[in-house]
Amino acid sequence: MEITVASAAAPGGINEDYIITGQDFVVVLDGVTPLPNADYGCHHGVPWLVRRLGGRLAAGLTEPDIPLTELLCVAIADAMTGHEHTCDLANPYSPSTTVSILRFGPDSFDYLALADSPIVLQHHGTDPEVITGYTRPGDATPDHQRWPLGRHPEHPYTVAGIHPEAADKAVTGRGDLDKLRRAAVMTDGLSRLVDRHGLYAWAGLLDLLEADGRREPLLLCARQTPPCQPERFAASPMTTPRRPCAFRRRGVPGRRSAGPAGRP
Ligand SMILES: [Zn+2]
Image 1 (cartoon, rainbow, N blue to C red):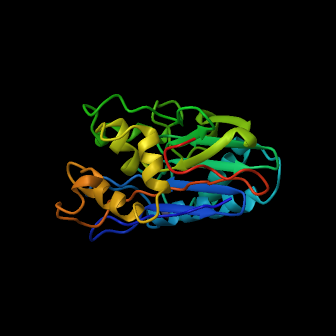
Image 2: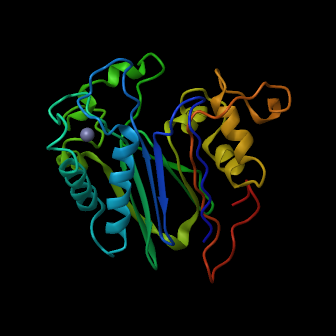
């Protein structure tokens, strides 16, 4: 199994994403950027939250067979204890994040997606399947409409922050490892190239992630406003990518390797 990671902060900003991988798991957290000039009741900030949550999730993932929703619930509760005495956790603008987890076992894999960091799975001989905990209702819904109720588990855009029960809102599932050709876990900074801007099909995006030398240009492409396509890389002025990150899996040890990009 091969896992590749890529991530970058917004130009001049801090990276509010966090990625942790092991031999058999991937965790991606996309911290929700605070509203400008908002009092969010926490002096730690989003980067602290994603690292704290990610660290606890990684520790839990070393224990086999614990349900992913349970892991996430415990991790959120732990993060809360880290600042419940110093910060206002009742503040609806308290730091929060999406959470996506992909875990591999000997014969199967399972996944969890809370909010909109998609997990894209492609099985041998099939089109990619997209797992997401939230489908944005089109470009007409600006990011600020996700505030502040996304912190509450009853809101359709539920994120991890100050409610451990938010874990129950995550989309979860399991599949056979033998059938899986490749997978990617990404923030919406990258997935928007497909589901918001229609620049690629999911399989095409996976091909680019899988191709050596194409990931960095792809991140640069995602940073463009509006985002560009690879054939325009050479002609387009490039800036630092916004914050996409992605992983891929190629082949299974002891089994037939994945075919060339684009060919199941
Ligand atoms: Zn805090």
